[in-house]
Amino acid sequence: MNRAQELLTHTWGYQAFRGPQAEIIEHTLAGGDSLVLMPTGGGKSLCYQIPAIVGEGMGVIVSPLIALMQDQVEALELLGVSAAYLNSSLSSSQQSAVMNAASTGKLQMLYIAPERLIQNSTLNWLSQLKLSLIAIDEAHCVSQWGHDFRSDYLSLHVLADIFPSVPRIALTATADDRTRDEIIDRLQLSKPRRFVSSFDRPNIRYTVQAKIDAKRQLLQFLQDHREEAGIIYCMSRKKVESTAEWLCGRGFTAIPYHAGLNAETRSHNQQRFLREEHVIVVATIAFGMGIDKPDVRFVAHMDLPKSIEAYYQETGRAGRDGEHADAWMVYGLQDVVRLRQMTEESSAAEEHKRSERHKLDGLLGWCEITNCRRGALLEYFGDQQEQACGNCDTCLNPPETWDATQAAQKLLSCVYRTGQRFGAGHVIDVLRGKQSNKVTQFNHAELSTFGIGEDLDDQQWRSIIRQLLVQGYLHNQVDRYGALVLTEQSRALLRGEIQLSLRRELKLKPERKTKPAKRAVAEHRQELWDALRECRKRLSEEHGVPPYVIFHDATLMEMMEYMPNGPVQLLALNGVGDAKLERYGDEFLAVIRQFA
Image 1 (cartoon, rainbow, N blue to C red):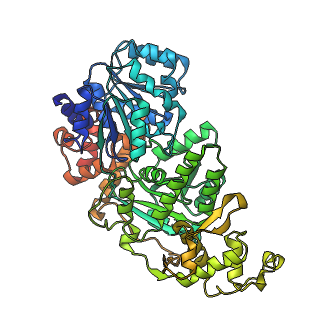
Image 2 (spheres, rainbow, N blue to C red; image 1 turned 135 degrees about the horizontal axis):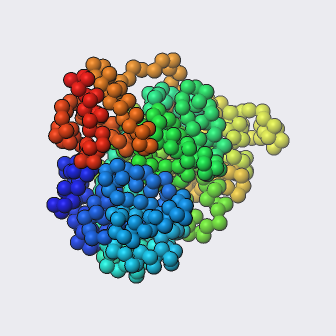
Image 3 (cartoon, rainbow, N blue to C red; image 1 turned 180 degrees about the vertical axis):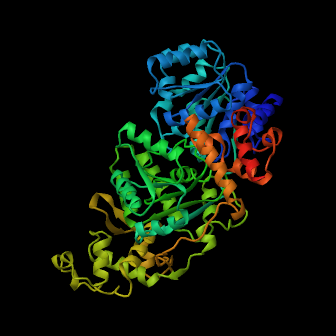
């Protein structure tokens, strides 16, 4: 552990381990297997990188994404660590060079994709080498109940037989109790210790809104995030491209990312996001796993994800540097219908579909809560919060509730009298007394419920339907085009045996014409801040790496605060290790001296 502390200080530039890092490293160095759950940005990578170097032999890190491997290796090389990756992006000669370096003991760490690792030729080759550990990153991918299952991970259990004396460490940011058990079982970890950190990301503000005018709502949200990096998730590729184009037309630098783009375009857009500032990526869930960019200031969802696990994983890409970040989402009735339809139409086994329905219902219930949103999110993962967080929408603007008993009875009666054959749009037309073609076709203007809901507008009725679906008073039948049907639970409500309170939806604010003044630093420090960032940008372009690989914003902030006047003082700052001091120290000290 003395050697581990020395590496932390002189290589990574930090004075102390965070949370359970030291305990995990000590357990791994002693030869034990472990399951590590740590939130995004919590420092998972150090838990295997340091023991890989301290232990005897080479560390093997299983990673599901080529881009993630490349980012990690680039960062390690700048720290003076000998690391490489082995995947399909390399030519035959490049792969041979990496394998030769590993065979001759020149590599401290090798990143490898699971599909490459499980090949017999790879396993035979690795079995002849001395390995310090095997780390399985993004270990939730092994779970068939998880939100990001990858079949190649299922074969990783062979590692237990081939490398019985090599400690294995499985790491993830997202796993409920069932998924944790499955990770241990499928990877055949040997009597592993479970290290479960708090899932809380206190710097992230969670906000969920009902979808009224999604683009206008997004624009209002982005007014406080101009000239900041962020990710916007959409459900479909078409919506990704139209949203990116729409944002560009309103002065934002927005680029699309989805699996339908060719590999070259996807790679180019990802590199722009990592290396340029103020870029917004509009993406499907194909984007984001393993993204190390620390200064992502917001993650926005224009559509509902499939589960709380997926939502937590995606929002975790914001604020990795510990500074304030926003997780913002709009969702509507159509999202609920579409996701349930996707579940029912999938070819999965019934047990898996049942699990997916349960996860979606859990997310919907979380969206509609009126108490602290963060507390409910943590509770889902078995984490406890002693008091309300004060940094989520329900804490900052507690939602109003209203007695919706009579309105709900009107709606349920209308669903019943129209034959439980129609979707939300037609039921609302009947309630509001609209003479639509369908109303005329089915003579629904003759019903007793025709026009009894004129006092509420379309959006209010949609809110009521959505909340009745979430609370189990209504069900939409996917095989009948989303027709609304009553449930057994609705009987008591129709009879007046219970009183129903629902959330009152917030009205859209008027469009704000000007952006509020906002500065990252005090005004008298702005010139120094800009000069430090310009120095970092220039160095990142020279070395061909993202700016944050040179130094995080937090390190530049410490340079401004402490104004180091020499190498010793610069080395004392967080994020400045021996290799970075040697490579970049003179450049940054020269900038600081100009403002001393």
